[in-house]
Image (cartoon, rainbow, N blue to C red; front, side):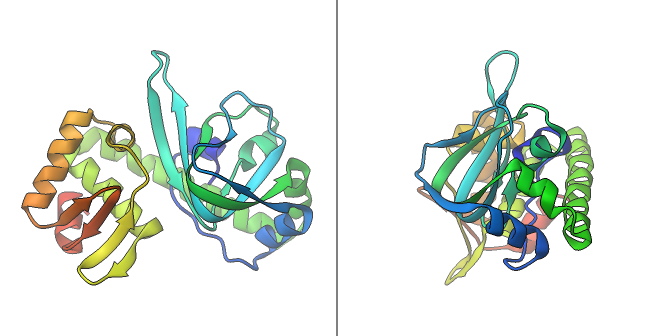
Length: 228
């Protein structure tokens, strides 16, 4: 998952095992850096010089529409690689990567990725990641064409469960470092309709919300609202 893949292929979290050939090669050629919330790892239009393997924290991937609106493409976390497509094809970054929860990441030069792909297993792994994102892009196109705001919000919450959920005493807990505006953008909806959809899910006891957090109480009901 890279910001470049997000812009071109869609967004889905694809965690990578710590010792697999691809991440091992990036660790060998890169170095660990820490980034604080609010820092930008790269911006749309930048020349691709580095690839990032996230070990800890969260990164928001977004781009800007022609009228200046922020369009959220995805939220990335531990195990995700970002920045790889531009490193491969030499094109400028297609999206911006913003740290929304303090990040620790391996930062490797773009050439490290090309060297890593000399390993057949690493190449297969990257192909699998990109294929998964392409399938996700197709699914999201169908979703935006067929689901109402409630269904899209339910889908995004399920995506957060998969990537960032952890067991809690009252259900699945998700720490959500997004503003309501960013969540609405990710859902392809207005802030008002997204807030209304969240209120509906609360009223149905599917979820409860706190300050930058969600608790999922009824995962099956949430799936039904997402028409899964």
